[in-house]
Image 1 (cartoon, rainbow, N blue to C red):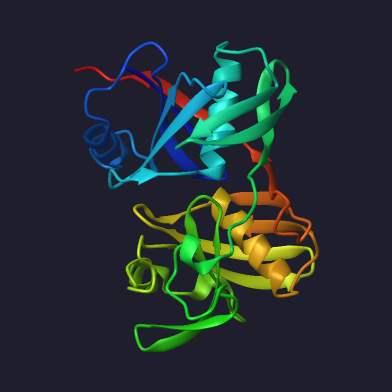
Image 2: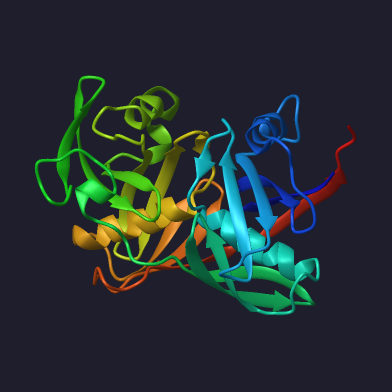
Length: 279
């Protein structure tokens, strides 16, 4: 079985072309291949399949084998994969993930895709649809107690749930390995949550660190960067175009502030290496 290791801002996955054949046990394969000691290593596994409603389908698994609805860094890499491997000659693509379609425009250099702009769709702010348990219709700057400490969270779904926490300190100083799992599994999040800790640098720059459900800390999270920008705009912390600085690189996020408008994300997509798994 051939595979390609790719990353977007350090958010790395094992990519497998399943347009011509299927993997028998996808969940088991995701767990084994994602293991950084005994497998290839990655934040998860992404399968590229044919689609009846788009150009291709992205099937994304977290490192623990759980299925993910959307991965912003991953979908950029899927678009690069299908272009670079000659599965399409389109530079504007529609890619399906769990029934939702995202639209991607590729930037090509020397015959290869180097970055992509993705229409990530409208942000979901209604608490019950994220989901997060709240007495309010929207969970904006709302208190939540985790491990005996009260935080203020703004919750957004970009196809998956996010709790955005703004801090005065640098996110690099947070004990994420300790607090991340407690946020992820807090009972106010019925489907668990991704958690972003964010410092506002200025109105055009945000510093972010993320704990992803099912994977732990990752160097970047595309949907998390989008949720962070939305939360910052809603709270009046930044302008409509903002750079989110992550441990693995930068993502450019743009949103009008209107809930009926899409969030746009632009960032790199990189191939690390290719190989073949022997049974």
